[in-house]
Length: 452
Image (cartoon, rainbow, N blue to C red; front, side):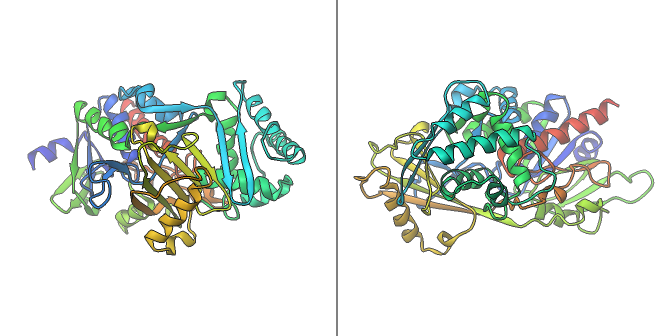
């Protein structure tokens, strides 16, 4: 109890050790501020970590969902550098090169040349293979017009409405825009916010050519980032308590302790004077309960959510795809990642974003369907040897029209209580970069507070 009483006066307490919590803790630790993380699970990393599955792949760590990054994720890359993580050691960088297969269309290819932005994208669109000249011109015209408008909208609308406004053909929507929207926002185009989508496009394609690069992890996310972040935090006056489920937060009464939080966990009671809720929105809402008066925009941290299904299929080691990432349209499968890149030959991860009929299929039927769709790429594909289906039911918040009007600030009505998470007000939808930005901005605010 003595240790806690001494620590709470200066230590920042963070509930949740996902990417936002770890980014926040590492940024505070770099500034010499003591931190303590409380994590309900036995492992850190939240929705982006390596998991050992007992039934399938017992000797292999698989991520609890396939993730890739964009070259535009500058905050995440900066954090990696801070932690001593060398990009070339953990990431495979590939310039924009999309190959998309469909049972109803010839193979479609979009390849960006080594030119400055946005010319690399302009040329890529003009040379879009198996897309008509008319559609390619419409694509370029759309890019020119949204650049002239600085990727902004007077009023938000759905991505589908935006594409209709710019006369995009059904083939372009199915083969390009819908896969990109699902990949970046995990929300169907008829519901997805065009304003957020344009922000992602602006950050990825309008500045540096490298921003549109695809970055693939060479190992599981725990090995690449989570474990290194934990090690860094512990080396800089920080620690983490696992299996500490926070059950209740109270505000200590009395004139001398008005800024003291009482954190009641499954194991002990902890006191703190600076507290960060780095949890999903629905958990943050529950923890705040009736104790704190929220700002109007934070009164309902009630988002709807979309799942992401990742199916890992193990084939003989000699099996490989044409390239690291292959796209699909008109199929259940949306993206396939060849894990040869992270020294797992023959392992293919297939991603299905958002909700759909795949969630109602029995596992083996789902796997067989995906296997048959992979034959579009490899017609002589042998039968799979093993598989693992991973479904994150609340993988991301539903990034719908006008979502930014309800995304809260990291500040709350209490000056020492903060929110961190990809659902808070950042430029990005629910992505690794959004989570990292949210954690870093809270940390920077606290650092500035303490300087003053």
